[in-house]
Structure formats: structure tokens, C-alpha cells
Length: 517
Ligand code: FAD
Image (cartoon, rainbow, N blue to C red; front, side, top):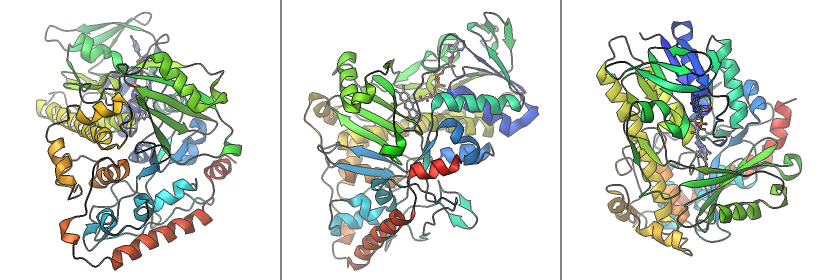
């Protein structure tokens, strides 16, 4: 097995990779991480996807050990605000949809739903989010989710079993800089070497393989396997190895963001247990509640909005708390490096690819990449089949997320500005338009969504289609003559369960104050 790994870059990708490799291989693999003292990490990326819980489980960390140090909070869903029309919201939760007689509840809802909230009728978590409750009780006991063997989709993919109970899936929000600091300690305590220095040159042998990186003050750092975590720069993979970057910009036009870190009185104003994505004239604003501040930013397309306009809009959206806060303007590189693993270099994080922050998938890509890297960890012979497998897996997951995000813009009813009107006619990934036509009368199932690797199950597609409201939907013809009484009872039970949880669960603020002692 290769046993000398050099990671260049100490943002979220660099430290997640170092920690994961140390947790996987211990002393069998030496890990050296070089990060610049001058070029900072990107400083955003604070909302995650529910698979992230497996990352912390793999590191053998309990929530009490890392969440307080990272000002972390729980995330049960993405709340989409104003994507259909001003004042409208719905949730895309991590909870899978249940079924009646083999048909997903969402399909039944199209036939027999009697309220304007499909999310509250089909998902318990929508009520918990609206009422701003924590997904755990103060004594640490988890919620129980009834397990429906006949569910249309496999449940449990993102849930972990614990003490015989099944937890409703959730993800985290955390401060990116604090997480990097926490993982620095985690990795170095387990033997990772940490060098703060600038990489000035990447050294290649005659075959084009990397032999080392030359730093400004620490000489050449040599290794067998090099992980490029240098962010959008792609210093090793794109610059030194010349691997091309394939843009997704024709389909996803947002190429810029402006971000603010805003102090926030959580005790007074509460903590929403979800990320909010609020549609704007030329993009959308994220709001991520952390313990002590909110992270917020406007993601926009510069063809439709200037950086000054974007900053003004964001500040107006946040209100007076934002007045003294410095803005961070960011240019985004949307797309993916053609192959993330080339010779003895693997790109992880933004150097590998990024599809804009909607649905919080950047950190999920990092987690997925390091999982795949450990599964396909190279032996001395450098088996090309492993490299190809890895590249297929990474490309597949990013292309899948691209399709899912394009669907958000196509499906949004909003069409009040040129940005939203153009979204409806913009080029789409292969086959998506045809599938949208099909979904109008038959909601997505596992055979009609982008062949899925974990993360994008059909229920997620259903939520977006039902919530965004711009594509006319009809229930499946097979339900035309069906008796709707069982489905209606199920909607009612979900509402009742939601109300019961709202009464018994603590607020996120009380939960985290309790966790912190
Ligand atoms: P960076 O954070 O850019 O780190 C690069 C590192 O490389 C730094 O440590 C730097 O010092 C080092 N470096 C650079 N050059 C050199 C050199 N010459 N020598 C040595 N070191 C060098 N993801 C989510 O999952 N959820 C979100 O909500 C989310 N929101 C986002 C919002 C925006 C606007 C953007 C742009 C991204 C967002 N992401 C999100 C993605 C997420 O931020 C990234 O996936 C994550 O932060 C990883 O970044 P990185 O470590 O790859 O790069």
C-alpha cells in the first residue's frame, strides 16, 4: 500500500481528508498537510447534507465532543422561501416519504391533499421546522421514526440505528473555520504533520507524476500520493497536471456570491433547525443559523446583477445587524475537473468540482470523495482500474447533483425577472426535459431520476417538483379510481405526530445551551 500522503490545502477539504485518512489507516499511512499562511480558506460552506453524520461517526466522535467547539447546530431540511411566489415556503427535509399501497404519499397528496402544504401532510419534519424545534430531546434520547417496510423508497440510507431506536435523519450547520481548527487537532493528535508554508512549485518526474512540492521555507515535501485541496485554484490537478476543468455554467449560471457573518442573539430570536434559501431577483440568499451568529450570502449570476447590487440586496435582507459587518465577495468556478484522480494526484473539494451552494452539497462531495479514496486506496502498482472507478464515482455524483439543481430553477414558478424567465429555457442536462414531461403525470421514482448514488433519492425530486409549483403535476393514473381514505388517514397521522413532537421537543437554543452545560 502507498504510505506517504501529502495534502496541499488546509480548508474544509484538506482537514476532512487528513482526519478521515488518519481514522482509516492510523500509523500505516503518513499524512503531511501543507497550507499557506497567506492564502486563506474560502470561509463559507457551513451547511451540510445528512450523510455528514457518517463522517463524524467514522471519526468516532460524539456530538458533545465536537459540536460546541464548532458552534454547530442541527439541520433538518432546506426551507425554500419565495421560489414559488413571495411569502410562500416549503421544506425539503431529510426524512424519506412514506407510502400507501405502494404509492408514495406525495402521489396520494396530488390526488387527495386538502391543504396547501404537501410538506406538512407528508413529512413530520416540516411541522418540527415550522415550530423551530430540536430533533433531539434534552436527555439526549432520539426520536423514533416508524419504519415502513412497504415504503416506496428504501428508508434508513441516511439514518443510524442507536439503542434500538431510529433517528429521523438530520445534518449539521457548523462554523467552517472552527471545524478546520477542530480537525487540525484531531489529525495532528493522531500523527499528521502540519506545515504552514506556501507551495511555490509542483515537481514532476519525466512521466508527469508528482514527486514533491517545493515550499517557500520548508524545502521540498516529497510523497507518494498528493491530494490537491487548494480550492478553486486547482494548483496540482489543473495547473501542474493540466487536467481540464469542465464548466457547468451553461446550465447553472450563478458564478458569484457575497457573504456576511452576522452576530445574532439566538436566545432572543431562536435558531431555525434548517438552512433557508430565499429566492431573489438574480439568484438566492442562504441563511445558516449557527450558535452565536448566522452565515448568510447572496448567490447570483453576474450577467444579471453587479456585486454592488448583490451586496446592497443582501444587507437589506439581513437588516441593521449587517451594518458593521465586512462583506466577502467570491467568484465561483462551477463545474468539475474532468478526472479528479490523475496519476498520483487526487483533487478533493473545490479543486475537484462545485455546483453552487443550493442544497449544500460541497461538503458532501468532500465526504464522498474521501470515502471513495479509502475504498480505492492505491497499492504500489497503482491499479488503473481503481483510478477509473474512483473518477466515475466522483463524476457521477457531481453530474447527478447538477441535474437536481437545474430542476430547481426549471421548476420554480417565479418568473418576475429576466433571470427567472431565462432559467426556464436554459439548456438542461441530457434527458432532463423529457423526464420532466414524464414526471408531470408520474412522479419520479428510482428508475427515472439521474441514476443515483447516495444523496439524491426520488423523494427529493418529488419535494422540489411539488414545492416549486412551476410545473403542472397530476397524480399517477393508477390512482384514478383508488380509495383515498387510507392516504387521508396517513396525512392526518403525520400532522398529529408533528404536533406531538412540537409539544415535547425543546427549542434548538435550549438543546444546545443544555449540551454546553
Ligand atoms: P478552500 O477553502 O479554498 O481552501 C484552499 C486551501 O488551499 C487553503 O487552506 C489555502 O491556504 C490553501 N492553498 C492555496 N494555495 C496554496 C499554496 N500555494 N500553498 C499552500 N496552500 C495553498 N458547501 C457546503 O457543503 N455547504 C454550503 O453551504 C456551502 N456553501 C458555499 C457557498 C459558497 C459561496 C461557496 C463558494 C462554496 C460553498 N460550499 C458549500 C462549498 C464549500 O465551501 C467547500 O466545498 C469547502 O469549503 C471546501 O473548500 P476547499 O477546502 O476545497 O478550498
